[in-house]
Structure formats: structure tokens, C-alpha cells
Length: 445
Image 1 (cartoon, rainbow, N blue to C red):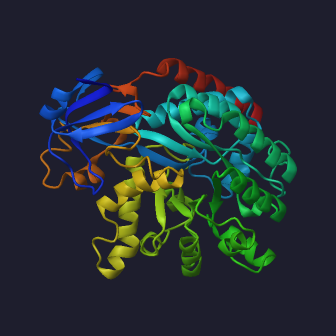
Image 2 (image 1 turned 180 degrees about the vertical axis):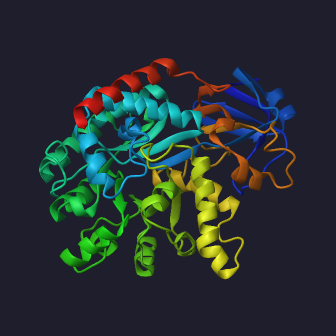
């Protein structure tokens, strides 16, 4: 018999076409999915170091939170019900007062919450002390694309977060040289443009050149609000996407978050350049507006989903899926009597394959099939809000939540079993988070 690391037996599987199989088994070895097939056949062929009983469970790809801020985990609950500009009034002062250990503790808390909610990988758009964030992610067992926030202009940006273009690039290169490929390949280091309003042309060109030289990604906020579009029209006489095109930033390795204030021309420009778009439904709706998601998808763009961190809410992508589904039905569907303007299958693909594409790993992540990385989760279906169901995929989207996730496997290693996270001391992480939050509040406000 052949050996394998993990054998998940008698589960159902969310297939790449978003159909759901009947009972089968999944073989995982050396971080990869080796086989998916009938239980009897695979049990006769393999002996495993670890066997998981998947009865009454659904295996699906782990969620990818394609835009979040781990350093804002300890800001939870502070930015709701506040007048604009929340970014300059709260986020900048908060991030400016973080110490390296604060960023480490915050990132561990973020990873703990993501794992408990079924997220297996994420893209951090950057904050301060990102080397400590990388340390925390490596320890957690998660997969991540980590960027260092870069800004070299803007009156609202404090000295702790503002650098020269040369300093920003040098420190990102140092982060890249130290952590790229760390954690057995689970860590990627991206370059970053925090947003056009706080980055000079010089810095944006340098980011594009250095990312291309290293064949890595660029993470940025784009068309998040009207102020950004107005800034570009006044200073460049062009819209944000057009500015990025002139500076050589647009391309397949660019990940843009929010994407609310896009014109139809912007959308086509991003699609032509194969930019990876990411929506943050709750963050967008509470302060920015309704994105043109149906138009973006029709243009052929790859779209992922994200939480934008925990300052506004939590990091449960099931919640983001629901919010986007009904926001799109209300804004675009009801207007034209279109009940399928945002289908359940489309939303699941965005939260899995779309996010994998944004991280630059769409070829090895995002689906459960042989030859893909074993970044998967198990959902407990034996619950009243799931059964009986005539169309299980629809029920999964409309009724599922992060607390339904029982087990998580990342890079072929069991990270959570029966709701217990195996890579971190949950009580210690939560205790440290409370202590550091209190210390930050005393320094920042």
C-alpha cells in the first residue's frame, strides 16, 4: 500500500465546477492533494499517518481573504458610527503608535480569527513592523502575501508612517530578502502602494520596477472613494487607473482592493491588463458605496473577496459573501428584475479561486482536486440550518458561517481539528491581544 500524510474519508467535496459530490475520500501527502475518489478504492490503496472522519462534512477550498490589515485587529469596534475621515482620524494615529510586538500580537490574533472562520490564506496590504507579522503568520501555519505599507507624501500622514521613496523601497527589499518563501513556501512578500494620494509618482514607478524585477506582486487600494478620483483629476487630469497605466503599475501581478469608484473605461483598462480586483463588501458599503461587480465580471476580470480587517467588523468571509450577494441583488438586480445578477456559485468562486488568483497562486490554490495544494476546510453539514436542502451550494452561501468550519488543513498540515487550533495557544493569544490593545490606546489617544 502507498502511504500518505492525511486521509479524509467519507466526506462530500465541493468540485471545481461548484457542484457537490456524494461521499468520497481525499488523499493528502507532502502538502498536495494526491487523489479524490471513492472511499473503498482509496482505502484499499493508502495507509495514512492521520485519518479524519468526514462523515456529514463538506470539504471545500479554504477561503482567501484577499485584502486585510492584520495590524488593525486591536482596533476592533473603534471605527463604527464615526464620521469621515476615519482613515486619518483613527487608522493613521493607531498604526503610527504600534510597536513591533504590537504588530506581532495583532497578527496572531488575526490569524486565529481567520483560521476559526475557514480562511487558509490572505493578503495583508501592509502596516508597520511587517517582519513581526511574517513571524506570526509562519507560526500560525497560514499562507499569506505580505506587503509593507509605503507612503511618501500627504499632510495627514505622520512621520512614523511616512518615508522617502528610497527608504520605502529599501525596507521592502529587506523584508523580501528575509521572508520571501519562508514557512516552507507559505510566505510571499509583495510591494505596496498604499494609495495614489499618499504615494509620489517616483515611488509608484519604483514599486512597479522592483516588483517586476523580483516577479512578485503589488498590493494597493484603488478607487476606494470619491476623494481619490478627485485628487487624480485635479493633479493628473486623469482617473486613478489611467494614472497607474502611465506609471507602468498595471499588470497581472497587481492586486487592487475596494474598486468602488470605477468607470466603465477603468474596468476595461483593468481587464485588459489582467489586474486582480478584490471587493470588501462590508467596508465598501458602510463608507464607499456599491461597486459595479456584474460589469466587472462581464469584462473578464478576476475578482476576489476580502474583509478589510477587523476595525469595522470581523473576518468571516461567509458574511462578506452574504452582504455582497444581497447588495448586488438590491442595487443591480431589482432595478432590472434580474434574480441571478450575483449567483451563489459565482460568490464561492470569488471567495476561493478569485482570492487565489489575487495572491498569484491561482494555478495551485482555489479548488479541491488532484495536483492542487492541500489548503482545504471541512464544514459540518449535520446542522438544522443546512439540512434538508434541495440545493446545497445555495444553502451553503445563504446559511453558512465561519463557526460551521470544523477542520482546517493548510499546506497539507492539520491546523485546526474539531474547532481546536493546533498551531497556537488560543487563550494566550486572546490574553496578549487584550493587554496590548490597552497599551496602544494609552499611547495613541
